[in-house]
Image (cartoon, rainbow, N blue to C red; front, side, top):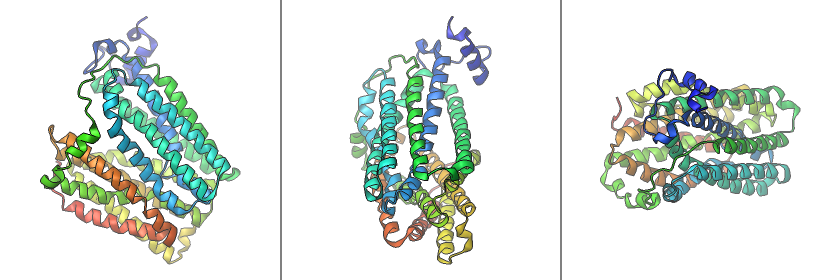
Length: 438
């Protein structure tokens, strides 16, 4: 029986609302018959991957692991830069190779298997190493993890575009994000309720094994997607194109101001691991504290997104300014409370509240700068804007890891104060950006 008449087809029609006629826009004719199968295979694989990413978060789980292993704070400072730049810059190198392949599912599967491999090795590091040795090993494996995730990222959108109708992709991604957020809440609740019963290093190693297993399961599900051959023309080297377009930084003043602002926004992206380290230092390494931070992060992301999206449509630069302003106030207040040795800073709930605030700030900044770039460009310039800004920020992100050296030498609160000062500069600069939304 064809999929359109199967139970899977019926479920697809209920989820998407295609009760009378199935929508097949902007996908090959051959893919329409397999759309229910492809929709759910992509949904489940994407969901499993998102949960796996959360269980190995460079902003939350891995900083806690490094702290528990006794690694210097400098290593935690490089987690986010290596994680983000490791995904971003290699994509520019491999995009042409992927584009020249008529089938891109295999690239995603390779990335998923390598991701699982990196996560299993990270679990081994947690069980067998400590101190600076563990720090170096974790950073190396995060780099491998990021390279593997980059393969998934550069191929996923192509596969989605060839297998799921244009007006159904948002539904798919919405379900995936919502279910992943709910699953992360459950994980956080379990850690918070039962964490005190476990050794923190062993438990996190177990989380990393589970994350790796989820990625292997995601690969098995993704393999079920029926992908038709795609176009192979237009596979130019994205990195070469980015360097060739660097001249627009000199000739396009509005874009140059955006790139400067995005560079300042790195202060918000770099901050979360230091809140995790500070919470661990001030409240102890009880895993219940980590569980509370996981819950705080998940709630902040899920509750803020709809409101931030509406605000971003009105004024994306104001969303950026609000996010960076919140990050500046949160960082400054944290430094002041630690300096005053306030009793408040000995309680896990205080750090959960602070983590909610910095997570809200990060969500606002990330969404605001994406909307601003889309609204700033047009059909002809947008691709050049994306390539150039990603290249510049990818390099600067690695340099931003040096904040970890500040934390290691002068203390985590000083690093947070430094990042808060840069966030304040970013807020003021954002207010001076031209209005491009609304």
